[in-house]
Image (tube, rainbow over the protein chains, first blue to last red):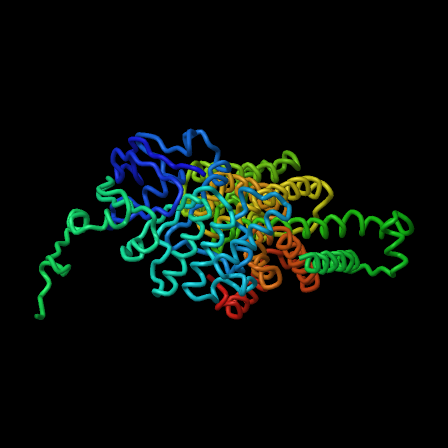
Length: 248
Length: 328
């Protein structure tokens, strides 16, 4: 099982320091990254994947610094599902999932087995030959997730996979991630939906302004205090927003 | 895939045979076979080997280079409108050749004109590769290409504007219209290794082009270097298109249309379209050259670039109309 760790990491896209002196490690299980827009969730995932170069500090997998790994070695260790990832051509489902094997193509049955497993896990095997543009939003999301799962990496980085999906599809995606995490993968998932995060994640990391403000079990992280600190929202004793009109 | 490749290869072979038979001098099958074997009438041997064969093979080769580079560029830029013209390599090669024609350098040696065209294309490729370095966005490559293309076209127009006499102007203008007429085995020998090598280089980037279909972030996370892929595509296009322009002038639409013709039969994976697009490009350009020969009147040759544009533009419009719902 792989551990992803950040040591005194600062950086972000361009010259902006979105992440600030971040010290954190991600081990096995499903970890949810939560926090307001601009907190650094996507920046953290993109930096972990090597898509952004940190200004200071290091990222590493187990005892190896990310900078010492080639693109192929990184891809064999980590898979990444970007937020709202595009598909530029009218490709079929199976062709897209097969791309997940890009870095680890063995040319043997191992590739076919990995592709089949990923498609079955995401329930997209029933429409393998359909073109992506003909699918619903939920089906499309599951196809792109299957592509990331097909790589069979020890670490899986997922950026807001439930965006713009109906509740049933959201639960379906999170259940797939939870199953994969329970099978031993280190899954790190950025989320905005806090009830969903509380329901599925083993651990939640609350980010604000590029720093970790809470880290632990969902029940300990999702508190009125952390809400107030992160989102600037205040709740009364009954759980209503403090400035909300009370109909009673 | 194999069935489509087989059909295309068969079509190309049939067209090559018809192209060798096409012309003012008629051949019986026996005469044709004899001429191919360097037997029989010396004049007919000369017509087949020194006139029709270089022209035919050159048309097929140049078309193949344009088709392959069109497919690779559309995949790399993730844009169905991309063609070798959009990155400026065609126009820069044209400018190099026009400089050789304008200053009369092309008369010094038969190597000067194609060499100058390749130099122009190479200069454009160096600029494009500099733009594709590190994690540069492909948009920067396409914008740089558009700028290079505009500059080359403007400089070509300037040279035509300053042309010292009408003869020099007409020589430049006719050359820019594109043609494979009166070409010899010299041009074929010059272009063949470059174009075939270029198709090989483009094929090396094929798997990465498939991955880039999911965007640069996803592709990079899969182990794809966008910069390396960009270098392969630019180098392959330089070899295919630069040498094509060097021996046949500017020819449009083949690079744009060939991948669109391949997609309905072979799917949309850009990497899988490179070789089939090369074959389609060969068939299209050879067919266009045969048509140009049939339609040309005595003393008024119809130029190949004119034929491809006249036929290609309406056909491409039809293609866009019928496939408009399939575009991403």
